[in-house]
Length: 441
Image 1 (cartoon, rainbow, N blue to C red):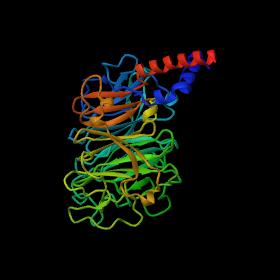
Image 2 (image 1 turned 180 degrees about the vertical axis):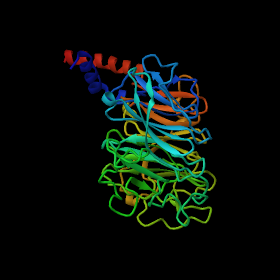
Image 3 (image 1 turned 90 degrees about the horizontal axis):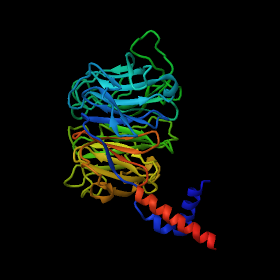
Image 4 (image 1 turned 60 degrees about the vertical axis):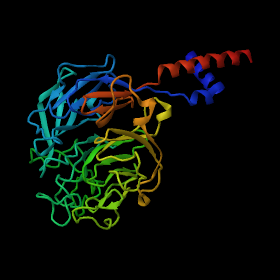
């Protein structure tokens, strides 16, 4: 152990209760001038860069972590994307073996939904624009509810979040009569999380389908699409895996009453039904004549909140209200005080919260299966050094687990970074005092 490390340990041992109550992070604006940023990610092991997705330009921008500057030349510009309000370039995921194969994946609408693979060029800061290869695609009946998140699990499979096809009540043109798309698990990829193996190809004769269904997917060999992992979702806007536990969190945008966040424990074998269109949050969908009892075996969200007025959802109302949830991440960065907190937001009302899933069994979820809810909009510790965190379209993580917050309207990126310098200085000071006392003793 280094001498500094000994000082820190000694200081924490001698004055731990004093240091533990201090703020151990800051919030810093690290980028401006982006156009409708909707996602941020980085390849495993890349500590120098993060990659930011711009929704309507179709560009992926490189943000340098050592200088917090944006490269003037985009990493990639995806051509031909549709540019409606909820359409565009929506998702990005780097292959687990990106360092050796250079593969990454994007989710776009044109206006059909497409997942496409690209490869980096000989220049690590430029993708090969000609390398685009289809993974899968499906029609999008309306222009909204596009989902858009993609990400790799620890199992190395690609997870793909799709909306129910748009419109209202999952019942317009292009929606399965009588059930809606989200409850239809036969030849229907809408309103789901899909799970596919992109390192295999079960469709060698189809140039547009380049994937294989993992053998342990819940509907392989049974009624249902082999690629479906979970279903019953309306518009899953941002999902994530807890990088420590593997638990899977899904923010699902509600319709007129409730916003929800679902969680699937890492040990799950998939197949969960999250209830839409019959259910919105923990209640029967109150509009369109589609609400009713929860489908057999349906899983409630671990957290939901209402659109305001009378609290019809499970939450107590008050300031914990909104109109469009943005799913986030369980914090696993260096700030000790934030460990294990799930950060999420409301895009429509510019609110930022965090809470802790209480670990209860999903079979008994009632929308209040969390503790320690904090409203960070009124939290002075979350006031950034510059700017104001507003329309939060997404969160992101870098290779080290630092948390980023993306402001869609103002084109800004904020970072909840390494421990605050003043806090660390205090620890070192107390550490030196503690070490001196140990020597004297």
